[in-house]
Length: 320
Image (spheres, rainbow, N blue to C red):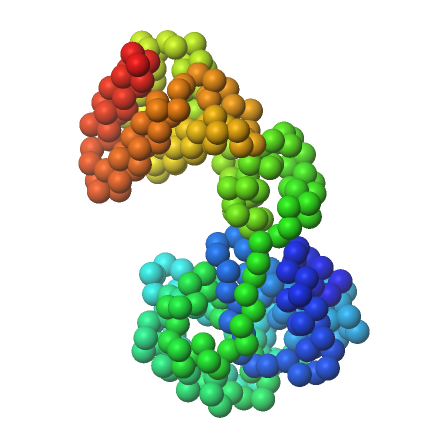
């Protein structure tokens, strides 16, 4: 098994495997990369390798590996407060006390910080004291999409593991297995828009499963049915706030992909049809309007007002 579950990043995987084989693994790692780059996958594999009882660490077959991969190993501990924007110093103080209690059953005690950049400054300073003089069995995995938010003193104590985009051929093969119902053009467009990061590409393809209103929007624009478009915009007032925001984001995505299609880039079939229905200037107008609506909705502007704005916009686009 090794680190094969993490696609791409061959140099990083070779370096990690060699370090583990030599028994020279450090005690603090900073796993850096944008959203969807595989930080959590790498952290789970590294934790499994540190607890692994097999030869090819992680082997994926031994009891410790299976427990880590299932998120039930008692000595692999997640440190986070997902209900809060920041991770407070109190949580790190509790960790300090726990760190000096020996592992329950594993060789190591692994602490994983999925939002290391969310640690407050005081929390980082408290953590610094621990990673400067850790217990012999302690390992700390700091995950961050913005490592510059960590104190230089914390970063300097960590071995940096920076994730890179997955090569196109390898990524498209994975996307084809994961989304066999999507067209090659849709998969390629998602890869390009994600910058080569598979988590982002997968999210784009999952969002592409159109809500009924998105499919209806496309059909009405293709038919140039102004009256029905106004009626569609007015009907959105009945949606919940979360549904409304999700739909606005989906519409912005579709208009943006249609702009790419008009420029000759690979795009999903829906975006290609949209590109045929509207001129480039109209598509850009729609993208900007979706941004305006999203900003206004997040500023608590009434949904009825926004639906009126959308109705006027769609009418203007048809008139143009």
